Image (cartoon, rainbow, N blue to C red; front, side):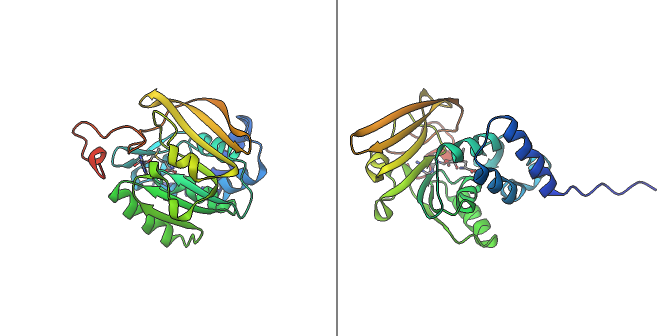
Length: 231
Ligand code: SAM
């Protein structure tokens, strides 16, 4: 008789993932704890579940991806959050980054432009009973003026420039993180601090994200039906 396949404990896999994140320089204890708590395997499609705790981005449908755990941890750390902050996320995708920010005790307003992802992710967040995430479907490069100002803004898709509406909707003392580059899918991660004296800009290094598409992002092009949505 063959042995039944071993049951893999997702929490054990998450602890192993977090140990690797520490080795790679993630030091914020609250971020590491959130990464232990949030079940990443539930945010990926069934076919990819066995790879959910590898340090890789994975397809989530509609030609989009869930970011690799290291990038999610790095962006969460560089965002310098505290519990109670109001955060705007542009590019909900699977909802995983939003769930990490919610686990950090923040109230998250998250925007996704694609109908299919909006529907599947809002259903998942409801099923998981995560209350401090508010999801909208629209062009996130225009922000969410009715809920502004935000303490933090995180953009998880790469655009050619920093969308002006997002700078306007960032509170003074706030931080905006966004991948920016003139070539699609090849960007620098930029951090902006809005101070009374002006905007302070830092380059946090190279990253690769799917395209930010919208009025203040890339234009929707080609025959990709998903790119044309909302355009
Ligand atoms: N944060 C996501 C996660 O945790 O799974 C990963 C996001 S995925 C790399 C980028 C997402 O941004 C895609 O779902 C894409 O549809 C979305 N997106 C691109 N342009 C957008 C826009 N203007 N407004 C809102 N969402 C946008």
